[in-house]
Amino acid sequence: MRLKQGSFLWYLYLDKLYCLLSVRNVKALLEYFHLLDVHRNNTLNDVLFYHFLHHVTSWNRTQIMIVFNMLDWNAVGEIGFDQFYMLVCILLAQQQNHLEEQFIFRHSRPVFELLDLDGALRIGAENFHMYNFLFNIKKEDLRELYHDFDITGDRQKRLNYKEFKLFTIFTMDKYQERQKAEKNQELPNHPQKSLSMRNRKEYCLSKIVAHKSNL
Image 1 (tube, rainbow, N blue to C red):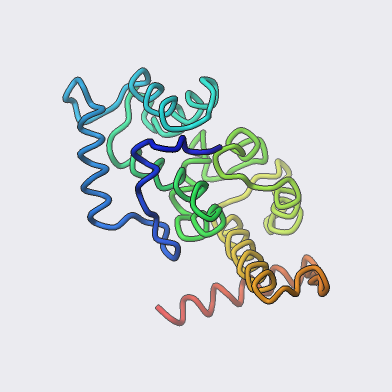
Image 2 (cartoon, rainbow, N blue to C red):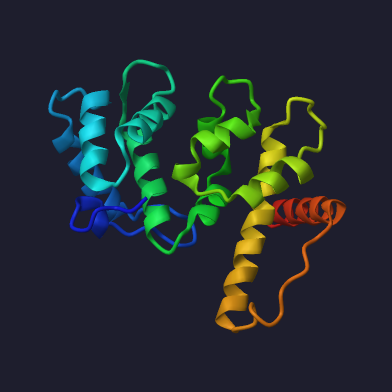
């Protein structure tokens, strides 16, 4: 997916660390949302939503409506500014330096809730496949996700939030290591050995403990 050059979103900037917009950008986005809201209901229905995304992205109609149904949590046929803001941040994470891993790590709970279509507090591989165009999770990462992080051994191969959080921590660490390797031009000559399943889990658990101790 690419944002169409010259569209309003093209000029917004997403913070690379926290994957959020600045206060100034949020104010500008809110004004833009009000311009789109021709019915003055503080919401966008599916028609307005489609024309907005058709104008700013390269997605087709099917993809746009899949995203709308995902954001329309209560199935009321419209979305508010909170969902609109979330979507814009996801779009900018894709567009600006490929920050998908960083975004999913920083906003793991909202992303998990978006993917939890039936409210079962578990997400299956089919959820990721449906929204892969939105989050750009690679196939090999999906295999690792359900092979290495399904700690509870769910027969239906569905992950709870804690397991999903472990995956985001590990993926983010891989992303940071890859960035460092590319900067030092070490990636082609010194490939990193992949961790075993047990070491991955132990590593991610240590990351969570360290994160909590710093709070």
